[in-house]
Length: 380
Image (cartoon, rainbow, N blue to C red):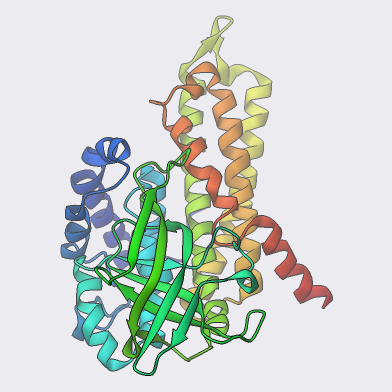
């Protein structure tokens, strides 16, 4: 069924994203995978193309377009292309809302022009070696020294960690336990005592730099507090829905793309003297995946529309996130199986999708955490 949520403007934007991918990303992605990091030139190219800070006010160099559907188009096209290295959605849809909603006017003037041009790459540092989805376990601390904070601690699995010029760090600014007493501090490249560890060797998404970060008596100016003091927990909960819906958008787009690739493959590949597509089992596999994807697409488009209108709540975002990513995982595995031995070869897109996509049910909140959020909302 034709999708109903996009206008001609969104369709034109989709074509511009495809042009950008063909020119600035896909010819270089294999090299980025070998290097373990993308070129900063790609970020600058994205800025020139207007793909960064689309929701930011024009006075700071942004697009002035808060319609989330443009972000959804960008995510879908990058997912379909298998371009996992250039993590624009992290920059635009995860960190961007924090800066837009919480930054002071002075902070916006300092940070947003570079954010929109691609000169300033961003990251958010929540996860620690001993604390993943559980914010209560965060041990990174920031001690108040009057006109500045002194930050100490370590973070891990930080996307854009090597390239980032601005890192939004979740730190404990009060001895109060639990999730209370956490604040968001922005650490800038070059701060003394701020060190980057390894560019972590992942099984997939090889071109996307994911790092360990270390903070040893880092002096953070008071004017780099983002949002309310000790208010990080509320800030994080407020903006996690967009992160999760973005992951779900990528999941469905990936599943749809892999299904199309697999349909083509089984029509062309022969076994026992006839195309695989002539075998009933293969047709049933394709039918089941197509149906599951179509049903999920209907729900996802409703979520995109709701979020664009400002009405998507955390519970439905959690539903979308766990369901769509688990669907992606199932579809990818089945599509690889239908490719047979070729599906295990790295040059086939389904093989890359298999390793790149496995993280989808983990980051942004695991499937188990999503179910817990939904369950609590229903049962108290």
